Image 1 (tube, rainbow, N blue to C red):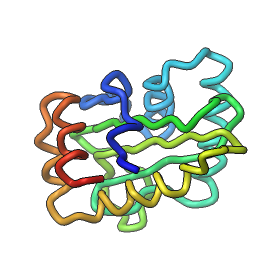
Image 2 (cartoon, one colour):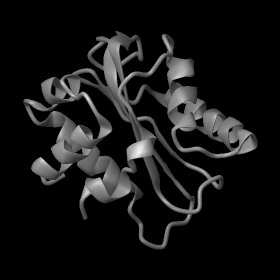
Image 3 (tube, rainbow, N blue to C red):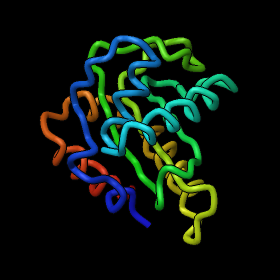
Image 4 (tube, helix red, strand yellow):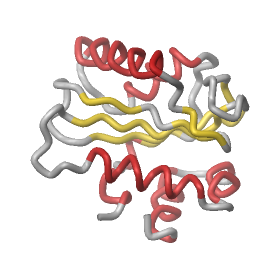
Length: 150
């Protein structure tokens, strides 16, 4: 399994506009291009998950994730906020890179946890945060995933 196969170029934003955690979540959800009702339901699920504990894993990276009936298959999105946002990350530093993962409650292929793990592993590689910061186009993000064999 390669992360590259889950990311579509139109679900990648290198310039998120939001300045607060809740708005970042909404903007990431928007990258999935669902309907308004699905967006609202997904937002509630992600908020509930964040209230359990921040998905900010440190090193400027957060991986908001949840299971929801609004998707039929695993969906992912990537967003970058160059100025950073307070996401209440475990290292208490701003978050610049956001990886959204949403999967249906029952998944035949059972990819949700492996994808979550692979993104966390990718994020822990020493040069990844700097490489993400230097991206100029969504295709470069996809190339980085390929290069890292993620």
